[in-house]
Image (tube, rainbow over all chains, first blue to last red; front, side, top):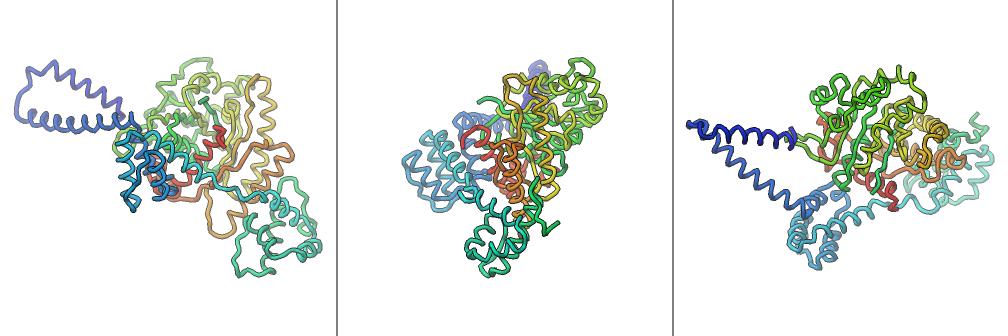
Length: 212
Length: 298
């Protein structure tokens, strides 16, 4: 059932009730009507509150603070900053859950839900826009392919002139996992193996002769 | 904001097309206040069954009548029986029995779509391409995003989706078989652009706009290396003109998450079913990048 279906059902019941109202009687029906009326009171109250808060975007602000994005990117420092910048007021709570409640109350009181939503959305978006691997990424990826296309002796010669720091940069950018304890020989083997594989798998790339 | 029509395509199955469509669609509505239409074009009806309980779906699409099948059947029969408002499913029914995400709309698919491919060649190629666009084009205008969930092939139904789309999004799993298929896919899109060109005067021709990696696992080297190989391939395909310079790999990769798998049985997008899960977090971050890309923000 959706809300439109519920609306039609209530209308139909209302119409029927209005037509038959003068003929209805008895304790069982009366008790049931009493229960319905009290449920309707509660529903009406919630509906009004929902519609009012929707208009003021309070619901959206609450949802945003409960969202997966918030769980990952919202810190108490960010929330405090939001409060200062949007309403020029300081949050007192030091616990994130309490701070969220205080923030909602504060924004609602100041009528600044809209600004709060915009501030948080922009802050979350900025957190998501992570660096894509640094400015050298494309260069180091091209280098990786080139290393993979070298013959064994060419590769050995090329690598002997590289520092371990350079090798680590090539490995990191190209998805090779290693630890601080990984020595030069092991790192060279890893770079060689995966660079050859990348070159081999690349569309229309020159296949190194040592792999043919 | 003008409507953005995006076809989610990959002729490899199991790459997360439907998961991407459903979860990006729901996140666009829930966190970005966008109005979204999902058009299910896959006879397997996975997007429909993800967002609708099977009994409701069966009743709704009985004999293919209130489904995307009707659009294609009308084109074949020369009739006009497809009724957009009757076919549309508005919002997602939650455990309360009432709908949530009222701005997420779905045009469900039906298994009858399987029959279309056998008969569709009775029509001229140009007529095939334009089926979706001519039936739904005016309706698309009321939405911010239209996400076309295509079957795992490049047959006629998918071609009509690509024809209607401003951009294609390619869901991808990080392994070599996907990588080899991706090159073929990119070449096929180029070919289609040529074929579509005479029928798209003054309109942007569809191209690959983004790739999205699903089923990612962080343990070991395996997936990092596979994603790196994808990036290397994309660079190589850009250099040869097979892939446009603007095509990007959208981050973050969607990590494997059981809560996402589980959400299919609950018939809810993960943002409603398990908003605290890593799946919901990844889709939330990915959707932000998606908005940035397709709304030209960054």
